Image (cartoon, rainbow, N blue to C red; front, side, top):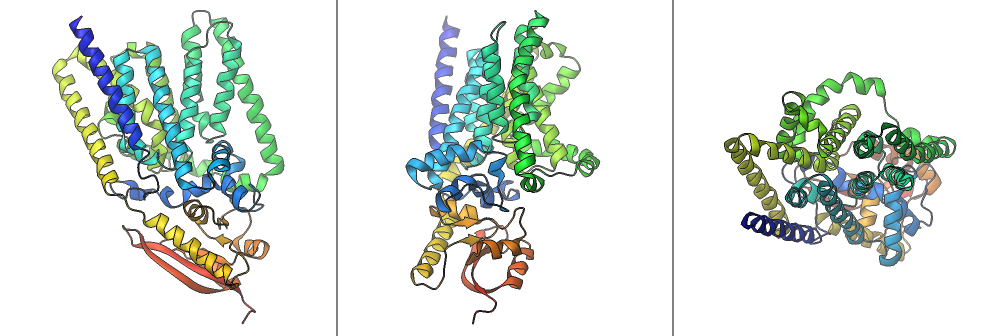
Length: 491
């Protein structure tokens, strides 16, 4: 009885700490992304929010979500810009609103991860899952950006949770699993790599009657095949040029280089957590050797299939930047906790050492979060607002015929400045042709990016520098240069 009471108090303490850590995610949402640890390797902090909210931004600033020849990832991943667009209908274009939506998705993900763990493990295990998720620094920092990963993870967890509730003759719920998985895939196209993890609970819970299990799996697969097949037909017929740019890959080249990327993956996995990821790997190695009974644990199998599936994507695709590993935080925590749970039954001294290491890692993660929140900086949003104000002032004076800004990261500037008409310089249409078709009067150039875009614009227009905003990336002093574009034949 005393032990139960003590466990109950620990559970409540973990849940309260989880709620506090989740609430902290809403603080300083407009602040710069942290520039310490390994995060400087990820350019997403300067571009990707604009990329993936681009369809919503264009709808509100240019009047149409799709730009012919533009950079249009929303065609293939429409769910996130659709959700952001719905929110912008009430808030107006706002980086804080878009980021708050991402944080909301993370909060629901923590709840779903808790619920899934509770389906197969103890309440204490589920509480530890929620707490470690909320305390993870990688998830904290990237979960505050308007990227695809927060919503993608939420829909994956929802599909896995629903799959865990499918029982014989419950075909309607199996269809829901398939539909939710399609929504996840239309949030981020890497969904198919995690499909085995999503479907496994259906098999695990119904395998006593294999005929019924196969029928339920077929029922879940049917909407996936039908809806994704329909989507692919539309993409092939209507958006072939966009698909070639956004979804194009070189399979043979990727396979040739995959061994070295696999080796690097094992080192980069520590970006998730320097202790939990090695514990998760140790759990897999132990299950492959001595601990065969772990394969009979449904949660272990779900986490294993998720982890290996997404690892295959990272290894096949290219050396994934830190944000790619955000999707692997949940299965890493599950694998590590399951292995640690076994260690406490097998060797308490080793388990105690491992637990202390996990606790030290948690303290390090929380300290990193606290240091960031205590010292927020706003250099990128300030630069974006300055760009918008300068363009608006020039437009008001009649010195420029339009306010359209083009350049790598222009959508990010638009999001952070509250909705400046902007378009990215990449896309299916060559940049020189874009200048003639869309006739932007403004061009922005990141000083640490290759000069190819700048050279192209210089060959087509006369550039007048209007602003130099250095020091936005402290590691290399990179900044933004803003140019006004004037036709070559204009005096």
